[in-house]
Length: 332
Image 1 (cartoon, rainbow, N blue to C red):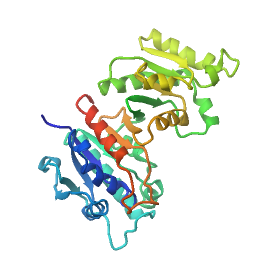
Image 2: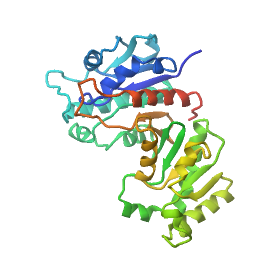
Image 3: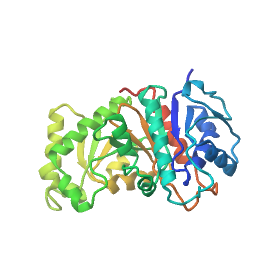
């Protein structure tokens, strides 16, 4: 039986991306569920394989169909875009920022063309992107632009618990102004559709409360009364299986034990704290709402330990495994 074919980007060459790719490709936890094609630089990957002591042989290919998907073989599309004479681990570099972007762009090209079933990404550095004259602030924006997706959705999955985010990279004060009935309705509709595309068609989505005890009918804030509850009532009338608002001190636990198929977190840290406390290394980001499936580690380039071989590959392994889990069900 064929395994899903996952394109894995190498990430910023100066970070830990090459090392977690090498460790992951050497792991039976990956090879038993997925075939992988790496998009990166051969020189960097040879270096990473040596650093982590992985038993891997690089096979350079031009396209995924040429791959030899066997244990111990790393099938690599070599973009040959890192000059090792000036390369340094742990340093912000325009060369590395541009290289990291090129790996992402190539992986998206492969996925758009149907040559791979999903993409799993490794860390990139925002400063390096800027130094490389790449005018995107991160992965989500790149994927949105190169897939023609206006507003991709981010979902975290940790040990089966799924969390969406109504707001993310804004201040808490600005977030309060974004807690609006229409926004909540729109997000639940889109998140429900995203789950269906992953093959998750049953279960209730919980809406987290914003204020302590979900406001206690206005005693501790009016957002629940004026915006959140009216949104939930409208969604139910529309036929959506939603519940809430449920106090944020309990809703994530309830989702973790299977009561809900997902939670709509109302702000960045509300959901991040819950998922990362449950299992920091296995908190994986899945970008939804696009014509392609993308999973990613949720940690940075770790410049401080890059090149030492110390980095854990647990998150990368889990990202690839989740891509393989959802790829057979994913619909455009």
